[in-house]
Image (cartoon, rainbow, N blue to C red; front, side, top):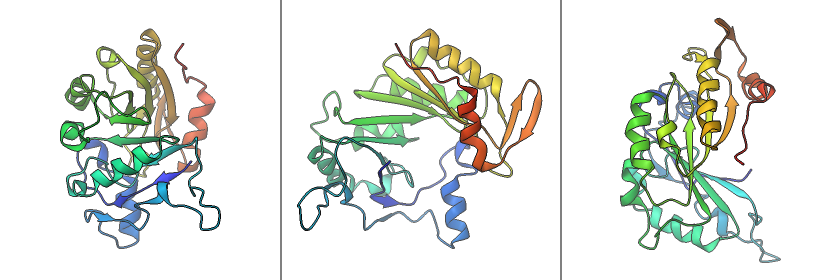
Amino acid sequence: MPLWNPWNGCHKFSEGCRFCYIHKGDAKKGIDTNVIYKTDKFSAPIERMKRSGEYKMKPNQVVYVCFRSDFFIEEADRWRPDCWDIIKARPDLHFIFLTKRIERFSKCVPEDWGAGYENVTIGCTVENQKNADKRLSLFQELPIRHKNVICQPLLEEVNIVNYLRDIELVVAGGESDRDARPLDYGWVLRLRDQCVSSNTGFQFRQCGSHFIKDGKTYRLNVRDLCSQARKANIDYIKE
């Protein structure tokens, strides 16, 4: 799973950011996450091997972009055009990034975006009904070829069935923190039902550190959150 972080740093933006793992990890290292800076991996997708001239980042892979920031964050406006050029230079890779700042879409895409690049997936992150209604009402109208909705951390039950047109995948998951807000398995199942009814892909990515099932609360280790979600075996592949 190639990661490409052309810049680091982010600001807490909404309720889902309270226990952000990036902020927590940086704090332990004495790093101020609110400082946005360009990394030395900025050109990683187009770097080549010295001897063979082949790309270091092998073709036919999904590249996860800006997972230590937000691709649409304001401070990166001056760097983003070069990132788009890099993405266009590698049509043999598929780039995916998540954003809580979908309202900045029109300011952040290149002039030749058109209906969207075939090798780009944009995931809109929502954590509660308020932000689902706010962000997804915008998201559903935007010209993007590949759209995902990321309900992680899921902080309450959400109804997004009216926003699932053209969505390829919905991801659900809980928070991983000692003080994490609980994730109720019932919320996950009912979100899955919405996806199945609209033939939208669904993935239960991770349980929460505090996980409620059948009215009982479980305290789970962070290392087990993803494996426990997989054991639920409720992922849905669109037909």
